[in-house]
Length: 282
Image 1 (cartoon, rainbow, N blue to C red):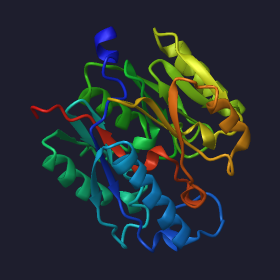
Image 2 (image 1 turned 180 degrees about the vertical axis):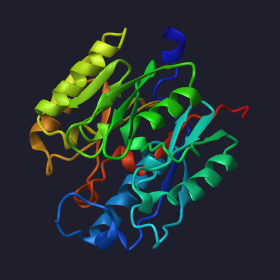
Image 3 (image 1 turned 90 degrees about the vertical axis):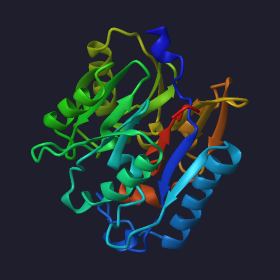
């Protein structure tokens, strides 16, 4: 297992996508809050800039598509692990065409493409938590058992366990990885129940970092050369209590990233990029 964990969080490339103006009015959402499109664009630009300039990743930026209001949330369109990319079948029918541009981009990066063509399967990448050792797949409004089975088939080197998502859109609406063996989890009862199930399903003992706000538990972890452990997390303006918890991570480079607008359409930090570790010989 140690070998599997060795490269956890190592990334060289990120695929992101522009925000269409249609996001403000037409993106799927569970709240009715009004989206400030100009602010959403500024926040997304800052997010991409962190990936490109501050962290030195090679960023592949796909153009926005006005006919796909949710297309900025690229995480849902693909799950990448090693040199394999599973092109998903998003649970919301209006999002199915988002996978086309993603597939082309990942092909251009010479990844092995596996497509989810089974019409009974649905899977959003936001329901997939990869720990470096195994996958947990949330069974949610957007992801079903058949989708989880196809993911298990695509990534045969890893165990895959399913977790019911009782509240929130996706599994990663209330959790994410904060480092090798460290799960960041929200403090709500549904989040804590989901964590308990993950712990029961796994042969590995994960450490947990509990934050006050479920949405704040969605962070982007990387382990980069010359930077070490990096964590993109919410800002103190949005979630002050949760940020105090992140500040205890003394070994991490902590990068607060503002996400006040995309959160109104159920978008979190991991949603906006697909991270890839491309070996030099690929």
